[in-house]
Amino acid sequence: MNFDQTKWVWMNGQVVPWAGATIHVSAHTLHYGSGVFEGMRCYETDAGPAVFRMHEHLERLYSSAEMYGIRIPYSKTELEDAVCETVRRNEFSSCYLRPICYHGSASLALHPRNCPVELVILAWPWGAYLGEDNVERGVRVTVASWTKFHSRTLPTTAKGCGGYLNSMLAAREAAAGGYDEALLLDESGNIAEGSGENLFIVRDGVLLTNDESSSILLGITRDSVIEIARDIGYEVEIGKLKLEDLLSADEAFFTGTAVEVTPIRELDGELIGGAKRGTVTNRIREAFLRAALGRDKRYAGWLHMVEPQTAEIGM
Ligand code: PMP
Image (cartoon, rainbow, N blue to C red; front, side, top):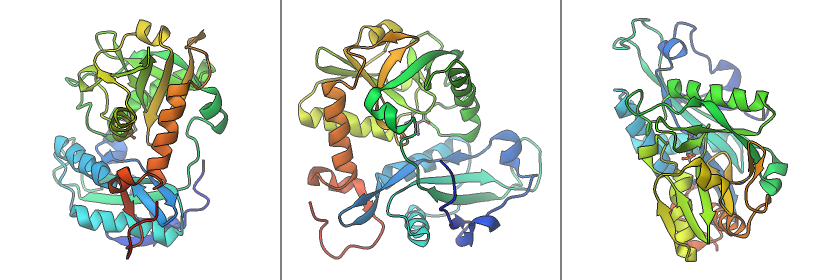
């Protein structure tokens, strides 16, 4: 991925050229990770670009901010408009979107009381996060030696910048070992999640996933997949997941805005199920993409059209 196609950045209420979207080296968040952010995708639908579940992503941004005592200086409607404007100005038909709210420059005392709260929205085209081939083949995953931070350490349901150091260490370790992605365990040794994804396993046609009691970020893709799976008629159980559950699963997949629905092929060299995208994973992935692309009207409410619409979107 790269930023070559991004021309404009929304920054503190204005759209500025890419090269002008800079902050000072004394910004509080650069030193202490004291910001919160979101990752959303905008999909190309027949009725134009649409941001998938923008409402829920912005709700999570505000709730992450609240957990860190950050007051976002814009209303949700202002941010929705700002996100759409970022897509429009860059003339993207589909892209990844990254709103980030951070503390700017004023003081480097740990308490950021004097630092301005700033907000930036970046957009760029981003294909398959773990590789196009891996969407077919499934990813190779390793269990990280790093434990997912516990909610007594940092709020796990907040998407806080500093928390991603934990993910970054795990991702680097996985890459150094030749794997595509890391799987982090929680403090009790149960499965938490990938470095940037939630996990589902399929056993005897039933989907199983964990929840915030296993130190996960409550993913919006996870939530969408639970709803879609139940609509298809699958049973979805939510509870603790152990490594042996994953190793003995018929199928397993990651969910996340960046990875969408990506199958898991193996864990530390042990093949999962048939070691290829299973039929349940396939069905879920296809149904998810149909919803995101505006091709299933049951989920039309999940799409926020970038351009104001005069008629109902075509299905
Ligand atoms: N867990 C972590 C640690 C993540 O960074 C992400 C990506 N936001 C997810 C799970 C999946 O969340 P979502 O489906 O909302 O993108």
